[in-house]
Length: 375
Image 1 (cartoon, one colour):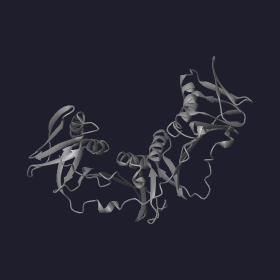
Image 2 (image 1 turned 30 degrees about the vertical axis):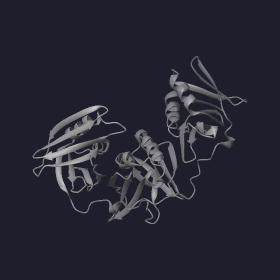
Image 3 (image 1 turned 60 degrees about the horizontal axis):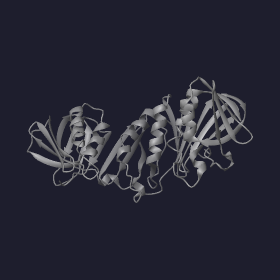
Image 4 (image 1 turned 90 degrees about the horizontal axis):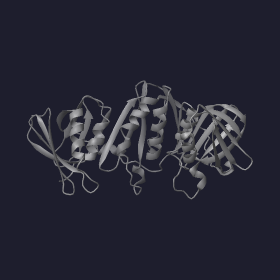
């Protein structure tokens, strides 16, 4: 195997694999990425058996071949090299020699024969979708995905589609049992992926994170998406990502959504975000509660942590009702408000410890439900 490649292209391709390769695994080869020189392309591949990624780049291939190399060490080598072009060659002993100007690295590779296959795309129908739509839906639901492996069905985001009129609507929902995020958008297409109401499409948290990273780097307006046999495939620019879906039933989230609109408190989004961030300063893993008190035309915030200290703040608000105090996990408020883009936030609060809804003023395409705390 031998090829020449631009340093920036090579570095970007390797970097995409770093979130996928396993740090702790009983299969050492999963610490590696697979390099394959074929025709006039170099393919950079990685998998952890649940998520697989393939990136392809046009390059000058002198001799075809393939090898697996430590992804992190290769990234560190290429990152520290200074120069525009890199020459890569594998010798008969599976040693890969990387040269740029006068810098030379030698790294021992593992033969690619035992590397898991991650390129089969048979029986998939792909649909076009604007990349920024998927990216926005994932950004607004990622933070409330559960990390509790005992509740596997909550450790991902639910993907649903529904045809409304001449266009499909796509929805993403996530919950950790204490809060729920709901985001929806129109695809603008009358031909799109149809989800099976009897079989949930739950994308694992790691998969959501890797897809978001790919979309951050996506230079094209559109991506392609396909689902089949428990797999989700995303195609963007030169990269294809395959993620195994979670086998389980997502909770009936519609039962959690309040049917009656609560009392609305309207607050400037930036003022609210900075206020709850100030409360968050005195929070810790052991204690992250705060009390929000609504009174005429203002909101007061108080957080007392016996191990750290106390924080108090007050901001203006559009509210003219009776005084009421509600306890919240302050981090949950920070997460929910950060993804709101509107200038004002509507707090919909209810009596008797019923859920609170946060949404941007006039925006029915995103909301976050948060359970109050007893403090």
